[in-house]
Length: 188
Length: 112
Image 1 (cartoon, rainbow over the protein chains, first blue to last red):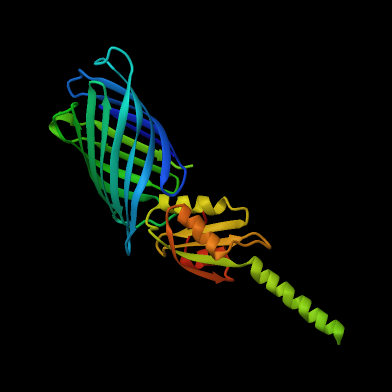
Image 2 (cartoon, each protein chain N blue to C red):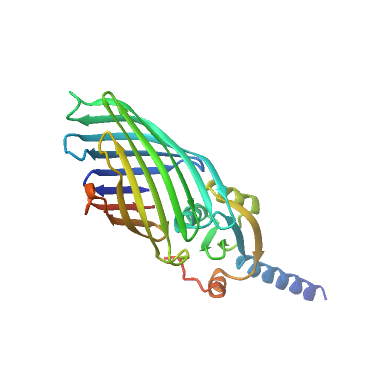
């Protein structure tokens, strides 16, 4: 799977591969900027993710993942490239009409530390079948400690079909108003 | 008389063969709520050399498989393939309806 995300303050690109039902590996590049522009952090990551729990319900499924791995960081705050760790957790619940997710990701490299906490809630006006293009509307809330003092609020629309997924939105809170958000996933 | 018996046996064998070739397995799958879930299952099933075609219906919570002539995948192996994709099979039903017929019954489009 390929994943790419863009917003003015955060960008990422990841390549993921499932090794088994519970384990996947990924390599990625992530960039974060602080609201005041004083911090510009670039991370190169290699990580493993583990599916701790998947629960099935009458019309839905929930997942709980943990992930982490070594990270190399480059930033104006560091004299040279440093290595450290990044780790986090991800939980979601979805039906064909409702999707909620909460995730947290911590980067810890020398004096560079940050925690990105994200919550999403989306609703689909119709229950798309496998060959249909699914349409969802919702909102993403994100906190980036050590980078921003504010919660970024981004209403978004999501389209996906069997092998592709696109999120698009624009932030509405005062500090990030108008910042676009794009997230693309390709399954192969 | 012996020739007639042989002919009847051969005819029955041919009929059985055709029925086998058209055999379809319908699997009721828990957790089948999104297209990415279905795509992961479809990918696993299509990777098996015995698979001819795969149908996924989120509405009906089923995955159906048809096989190449003379080939088959056993129930336990099908369960294992879907389990390996991260999902659980709750029921298996074998029938003679082709996947195209099943698509018509369920009013589904064919996978692109």
